[in-house]
Length: 447
Image (cartoon, rainbow, N blue to C red; front, side):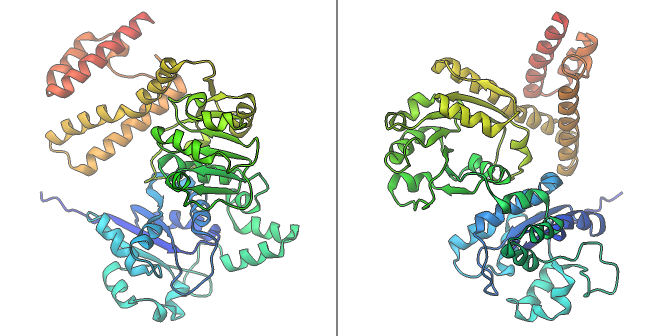
């Protein structure tokens, strides 16, 4: 029987999101249930084509990430518009966005998400090359109240109304905001916590910014290179603390460059797991700043930012008493390992243990995928097997521990079964399976 390859739909949802409201936040569920969307990209625009004045891009990006956090990896809030604006300054035309997404995802069918109000009101006549968008990217038209003949499952609310209520500023108007905007976004909009600076624009910083903003902190993200070469423009409002999240070798240069540019006694911490603050932040400490380490024990990649990763994270903390107190207050009840007093070797061992858990699942996963492919499985099937097995294994291990949360022949003491598995596998996978299977069997026998 000939296999039929159904196109996988990647929907693109762009807009100002100034701020994102409940209509935006509930839309992914509608798209998945009704339109069969397999993946959704949410893309705040950098420069509105119709000239709208907007809050800073980084703020709107952080709001969207918080608003969409509950949907998991199938919804990605992407900074692609900011990236495109660097190469092609000017308005964030939808066609440019869709072309860029299609180029990055050639294996998927890209479709635009647009409200029925946009289509029926004739606003598309003002859009850049709408006819080409319609022809090439088959818009998914979402019904909105007053602009649809059928039912409208999403709440009728607009960002314009939300901004007006925020500007009014009364408690009554903020209650209206709370009825129309996801709760975590409302906390970000209201602020109230002291401002913080993040130095760095890499993977870790991409996660720190929305996590801190969700706690109500006004956050400024600064380039590490800009701090070192003097081109970074520092905000007029001084920070309560600075969190350095650059690559490990760059931390000392950033620390030196910050000397004399911060208010006295400002707390400064770095996010590296293997570096002691007394070593890499020595210039700031000598200048009278309390310094420390606040290392998130989490796997973070800038390509997918989910605030829940840090909400559930553990942390390594050390440093001067004022820095440690600030860090512990920030992380609250999160699990903490006290790194104070560890020499360089033991500090590296701490970080190596973190890497052992976070990084090396990839080796096992790639070997297993190679075996399934050799048996004729297609990429969709192998991805499904990886997801199914990783999710169930981690869930059981976290909930039940060892040995109850472990499955397979080792739990039965079945050395012959392990040997048979090893014998059936190709060389690389067999070597890995034999080592890990034997290790697990020995650990379980010791009890």
